[in-house]
Image (cartoon, rainbow, N blue to C red; front, side):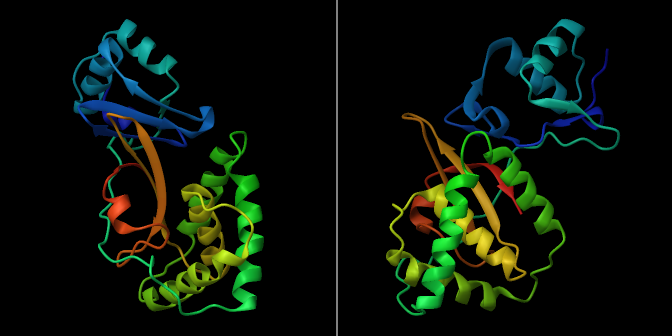
Length: 221
């Protein structure tokens, strides 16, 4: 059997990267990060390069849940994102009670939306919404909204966490008709995961320095 890239694609909510010599995957539906090793990694590498895979190797690979059949051109490329250098970590302009209320509503939504049973669906919905939006030429508006969120975030009694804040601000921006990029990243030795929201010009949640310490594994937007 010759398995070509055009016949397979990553399952929804699955992303991967090479970090620390490992082929690391994120599977949102199963709420897990893991490294693909041994025969399964070799089979995936062959599939990605369009080489021959015997049926046993493909059976083992398909059982991982990473792949689905594709009727058109498949997609087996690793995640990729250019992390900009500027960030909003020092933003202190833009505080308002209104921005605080908006942040609070978004954060309480995000806290529910990031539960293991819901995160895959949440990200799928965000991706669908972003495909309908064009934010080209509206970078300034996005940065102003994000700065207002950052300046007003402290009034909300929810502890800062990378994913809850990235989801919350993403939600706020989408409500205003803006599509930012949600990035999940990993590093190894020791393993750690991180997530952040960015535009082409700035990291909107967390710091750019922190984001640059992680390899993107799943990019939404």
